[in-house]
Length: 383
Image (tube, rainbow, N blue to C red):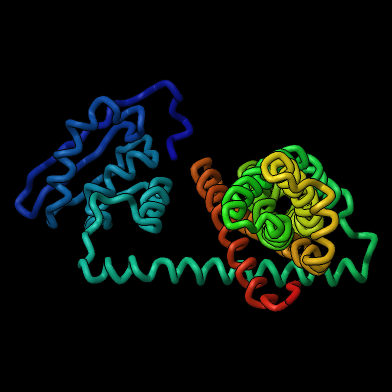
């Protein structure tokens, strides 16, 4: 705040006059106590202000201050040891600047070190606090998604088909190339390792069965999910984070557009739809790679796979793999949206939360896969 009658380029150098009296001293401030005014004399004035601020018998007279901004108020507030002196005269239009520093606690020097026992307990408790915070937010997000689904079931015209279609295109169609190449190479490497090892034990015939079970039921869905967690999950988190940085989400709320229905729900549903399709595509590519390698190494070609797998491996294993893909997709989309909504308006938070989104997505993939393995341990195997 400043004197509106003063010219913008007319800077009056700030001064400090100290008058010693028997009852104490009087400190009179004059001039422009602003950033521009203080930049040349601050080193000279600060020690005098601090010395007077430590005394209890000082009367501060700020009536002669022509201009005062937050920088000047902070310098004086620090000299006063972050509390109003017992005797001070301030212009009414300058007082709000000091009140602002009083309310939000001006930055101090080094924080006092906590006892080591308290720091150890806080360090051990921080993961539990983080888990509680994230778990609470995820439950709220899931509840909102269920409420949105119930609303859209009653009003099918409001289903965001375009957003869902765009998510399927971005996370599914545009991921076909990378997942196909990686799936083929993964199947080729796995087949080579299995063929070389099992051939030494004379178990060439079981190579196709082993690869079929491992790729279709376990490794194929997990590999596809990890690829999409790093590729699409991070993209969703960054996209929502940029919308928070540019205040697009706030604008949507102001216009009455339901954020969860237009941003969160389409991405979770789109990932849940595209993930099973990508899983089947990657399984096919991995099986193709394994067939090529086993044919070249031990002579087990397509005809052996076509004759052996339908007999030894029930179709329910493919159903389990595709179901895992849908669960992985929903979990990746949910984690990506959760961390995207937590991004603060700065680029450091954007990078941090995007990384956490990928890590959390991969962790959820492993946990869900373990749950499927435990629940379905007796399903899909012929004895």
